Length: 295
Length: 343
Image (cartoon, rainbow over all chains, first blue to last red; front, side, top):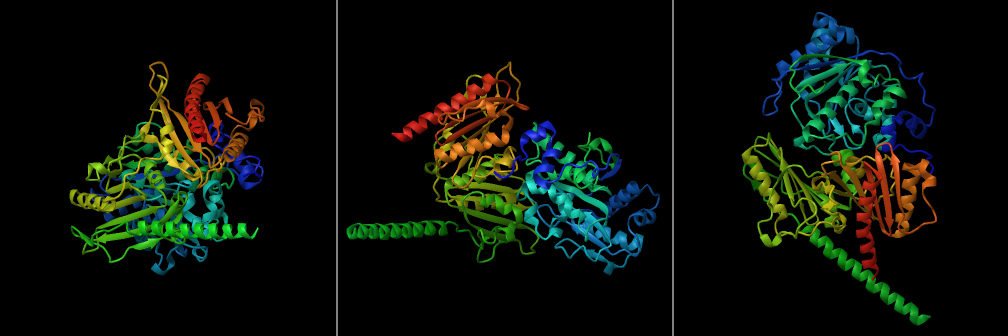
């Protein structure tokens, strides 16, 4: 602390100087616009079905599979499901599925639905579909990754959904909390991971809008949706918007995510993983409209 | 010299014995804490609890362990009740903290939920409080409670009238025959109202010892710019504007007690340097006692005051006069306490 001439504070967020401060205090390099993509219209698909989960929080696998199909069709712009999936994944790929195991775990029904799609629509054999969440060795044999977190906040990083989902690949997860959560984006650039993520698919069926650190059912709600895209930062940005809107609605007053999720802006500006500017994101919605939280 | 050494040795022996004795009593008190039934309704638990301490808390709950370690945590007992078909469960987590203040701190992080009476005897209830009087809160299948040095979470899935009753029953067992200490002394510094404009948001009071918890309640900096640690006690307490003229926006009061005046002074210097670095000329470093300063920054007026071991900071005030009124009020309490303590 005393050796650090400038640390990130609340005032940086108010002044809009987060990027510059992060560059100096966290990355130790000048902020570089050359890394950031300048004009990247990113598509994020939001598909919802009111009936995908019942009052007892049981997921209807059939409805979920239909939602998944709609998601890939919408995302790729293709007219049939085989074409849509093969736009994202090739038949000779070894595919790593990366769900989230903790706090608000990814529904196993979603993992199953993706597996079935990969086998039926792309023709990938079951042995070439790997459960790839875990340590550094997990993504190594994969030629493609599908990032499949569930939507949730996190008490040390603000949001714990897309960018944080690869934290175990670093081999040192505790190095990426608090201010160092800004560096979560660098994990997406390690050789075992870089360029492999073909699809970011967020389980937003039953999200957790508070940060924990342990589950509190009062802050879970049936959003009954799937969010997807190929730009991880854009998907995370839309996730952030939904969480923020839900928190404000719950309390009836501003209830900002705290600590602020600095990994999102850093993933854009420092690591060039995608766009964190909501105005540069095209949101394609399909299905249930009530409480969409994206106005 | 020899006589002095003998006296010193005797004193040391007495002191060590006392420490062991008190440690033993404390450990005994902690250990006789939980006596939960083997079965409740259709749920049954294993014979023994899982014991979690600081050495394995991260294996149990990943990064969430930081929360408990940021308070004075002793250990955690975990019981899982399941139904015969293993489909429904009740998770009971009993956190044994070293002080009741620490248990209160964990409870104070979130005052939401339905207040539940868990102490059957009126004599067990404590005196009037600054924070909400609830000692147990329920919502969505989760019961959180504070009873003496215990903070507990009892969570059931799914949340039904039957399962809720089982959860509340377990909560009452955990709290049974336990003392109901008063909330931390530090809360007494918080006036219910300040002037005619400002009213305390009781339901947003948070008690903590770590910048990690501070940041989850009111973000200030990812770094520990106020030098918070286990020896400090801190409060966040918003005050809302109740005057007709003013905006409804709340101001945020941060009130901290350090272990010594020296530590408090050092913390203020660090805070000023990190948070108000462009305002170095606005303060007089020669002034040690009762430093009081006010600055107009991006989100409103910020004021602070240092009174011995107590540091008060108010954020987001609409004008200088509001910041002064609030800081003056809190400072008066702190000065009085410091003087009282000095007598």
